[in-house]
Length: 403
Image 1 (cartoon, rainbow, N blue to C red):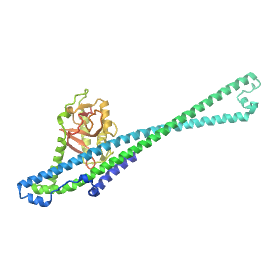
Image 2 (cartoon, rainbow, N blue to C red):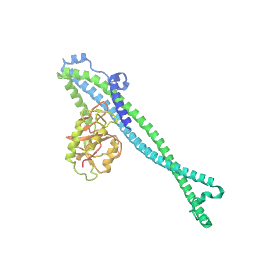
Image 3 (cartoon, one colour):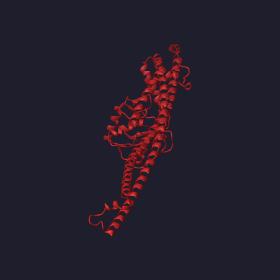
Image 4 (tube, rainbow, N blue to C red):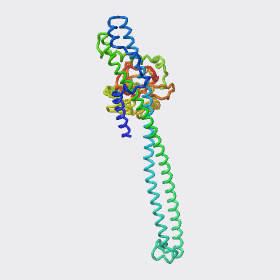
């Protein structure tokens, strides 16, 4: 599994790097953004206040459409990434089962072979003794060989002993065969799960590639937009870039109903977050800001969303379950750590889901850092960051592992 994780990180980085270089030539026709403003239009708009406002609004519309397209691809990539993580864990579990059964089968087969060897030795001894019964006499004490009754009793005991050895040998053989059969079934199951994990890996890598290509195409166009906006508004390209990112973030936050997320009822009593633990959690998470997102990664240079939360809480000695958004949510539910979003506190885990069911698939997880902000490993092509919370598809309960 370590090799699989390393391969996943390598492919994740390679996909992003390749997309940046070749992204423009592999885009789907549906990704085409119509009617980019030209420099001639910018120069003309500079001389007319109305045209300038219209062109700025046009830039903002295009940037918002790009952000919307990226978000759609991001959700698809995150969902596939989470499915891959679950398939990878299922493969780990069955691989552990195969290892256990293999060890049991090795011991059982060794015992069965030893029992067969013992039977062969007895059969050989009986063959050599022939009808004279000389083999039996080996079991007699000196001076008692002429005692017929003693001989008969010894022969009877020898027959019973051989019968017991035979039955035990058969039992060992049957047990060894049963364990071997279970092992063979588990190996087939492991092969099937490995195939399923590989298929999901390929799908997630493809989704990451699509997203990276889209981002590369958008960034290429945006580098020109920001310069054009800077000319129109007499600012800098960097300031316009930051402005556009702020507009996109605001659009995402507005793509949901905050009130509907905050009215969930309490399920049970949960203690307040431990401030000492929360401080360490937030310092660890913030130390990763700027690191690259890669599917299936859990530090210390590359992360995905559940890898970041898992390692962050592991750094303070708290196990929140394995590398999976769904698993981390379920463990919090089992430990009665869920609190309504209206009662969230810094250090709590927040979840995103496209399902209305309580136990429905959760595709993204982040760490609430206070002040309606969160720390997250957001998506392929992006970096660990601390940003304003987004309300669209936000699950109405947070988890508090520090309670």
